[in-house]
Image 1 (tube, rainbow, N blue to C red):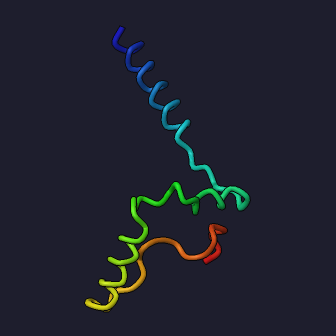
Image 2 (cartoon, rainbow, N blue to C red; image 1 turned 45 degrees about the vertical axis):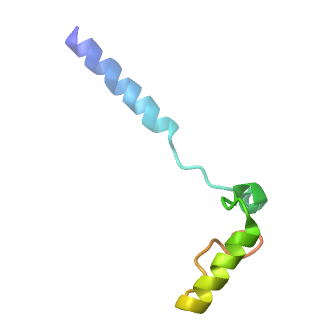
Image 3 (tube, one colour; image 1 turned 135 degrees about the vertical axis):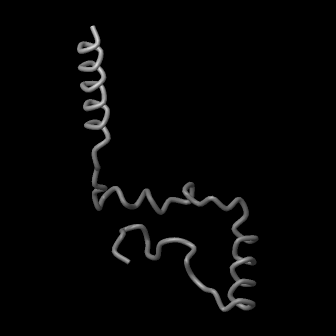
Length: 74
């Protein structure tokens, strides 16, 4: 009974890990990664103001996301 339970667990774990493989994003699908829905800021004007303040006070610019138009080449 214990062997059957262990075998079932191993097979279930192998099936679960096998289903979690890497899936490459095609170039035609990368446009959806830069969609406006994917932006977490509720108010873009507030975010722009905060970025402006950080740039002027701290000299920190960038690091707010990926550059480019969503093709993934930048």
